[in-house]
Image (tube, rainbow, N blue to C red; front, side):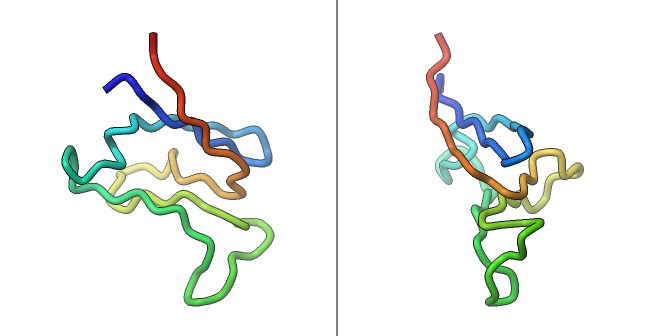
Length: 75
């Protein structure tokens, strides 16, 4: 429960997810790392990768132009 994921975008935007948020044993929420929309590669303003979190009321953790996923451990 002390691991978390930092998602970095090319423009410096960062968001954090608890690693447990990716585990279906803890939640029914789905977090997607998308590389396509409607079968086509994401366009330059969105891709090459994008984090999408269906069901979140605010899209603050929807990250476009993802360049890095870093797993860290809280102390």
